[in-house]
Image 1 (cartoon, rainbow, N blue to C red):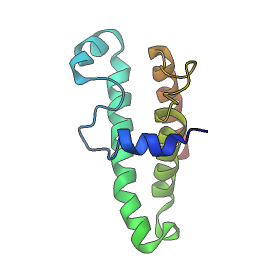
Image 2 (cartoon, rainbow, N blue to C red):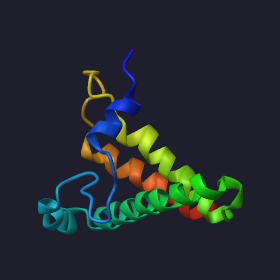
Image 3 (tube, one colour):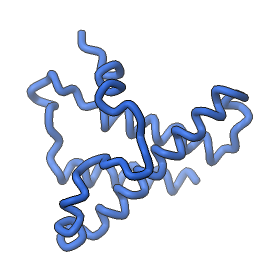
Length: 118
């Protein structure tokens, strides 16, 4: 059976502050006009993923127990985003692509959970 973690790590080895995440930046004007909340959600998700990368380095040095609760929440939400959303199985015909409305709703729900937990 296909292991999405290995594939994901090859495709997206490292999140950077200016990563594309969902869609190319060329579409920002379209999203700002038609879905103004989406660009802000995407930016927040990128920030969470970047913060998770920074926190992972700390966890490797001193352990997860030494983190503040808000940092632990950030790690869990980032894990949720990576494991449940970004790692769609490209080898499965029924789960190869995600329609935009699902991307928007999943992102919105994830950010609601993130803000409620903090």
